[in-house]
Length: 59
Picture 1 (cartoon, one colour):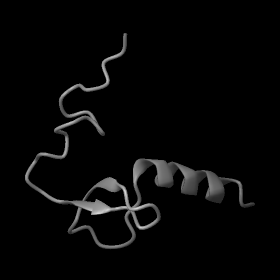
Picture 2 (tube, helix red, strand yellow):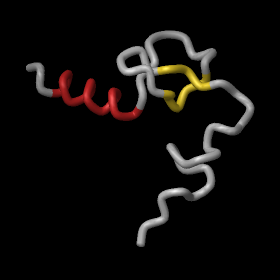
Picture 3 (cartoon, one colour):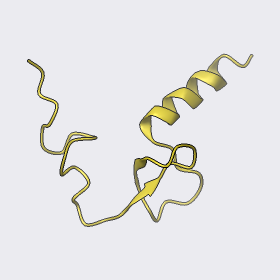
Picture 4 (cartoon, one colour):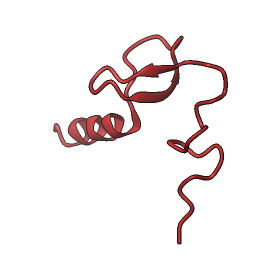
């Protein structure tokens, strides 16, 4: 049985309890892995992966 709630694992409960606010994804609004002070368009892991797929096959 895989452990999905390991401390410090991305997406695990308590992983974001480091005292810093996380930026929201500009596409879906989900929390990202980046601090809110990050400049530029921040994407969550799912949207990052989808964007990478789109740009990798664009020619």
